Image (cartoon, rainbow, N blue to C red):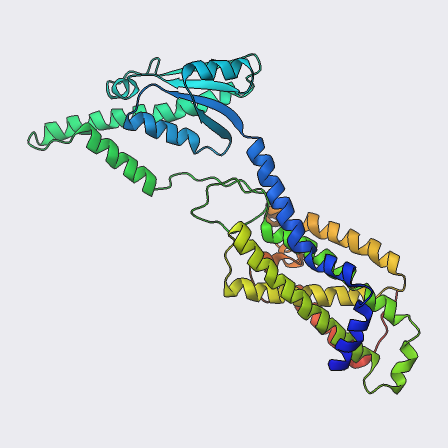
Length: 377
């Protein structure tokens, strides 16, 4: 293996910029896209103002619920400030939680609890106001339920009394512990995180896998260059065959790529809080074997390097569309389950080690190495 490394270092001496570029591309491109998407999401949030005219538990819980929405950006303002910012179109709209909000909820009054302000350019006023109204209706529903419980308890056992605040606190405790409805928005079948409440735009590992396949394919152009170079006849005088030379170089490239795959896992864990587990490491190893073996076999089929580049980009585009790594294809796979087995990224995205394509590629390479058949196109 030492002569292989020495020979490859000679080749890399003049090619190290492109080598480093393709090695770091999957990590850098994925982090860039994820961060840019986060910035766009943050900038696209609807700015609204909230005016708090009372400081009570119910009013504060309403404000907390409004701020928890991932689609709006809330500013705490005075009423005069809110009006001024709406007039200058710096806010889409503003809402005033009126004084006496908690007491009116307790009394069962649903009128004039919230006052809204909008301008001619307040395009999101209606959906935001409907969202706030739904939160207010939750509070009124809790209040009604609390009065009902108090009346029932008084009729059954007059000696047992529950206060209004105790019942409301218990309702909120049950509501926080029980996830009655939870909806995830995503572009791909990501593994669910029970504590994650953000809108998921990208499958991080799916995006990384697409760029990793592209970089592996384009780094495999050395096979075509050396297969049709003038050094091929010299292997008759070398102690190992040309095929053994190719296999050892593929192993060397795969080892280096796996090092950068590991750096990607650490980078995603550090910057994007992606968990790292032994299952993920096994899936990355299997993905690297599959990707390197597939790129090696594809490169063996070509004589012209530019045709190989064209086919590589086309193949990556096809995998991007059909694999489900970027765009959802759940409806298609539900109708045709056998498409799952043809998906080259399915084992990796599901953190599985064995995959159909990995087995096929390994078998083909074994046949090629044992029988010495030429694969040209």
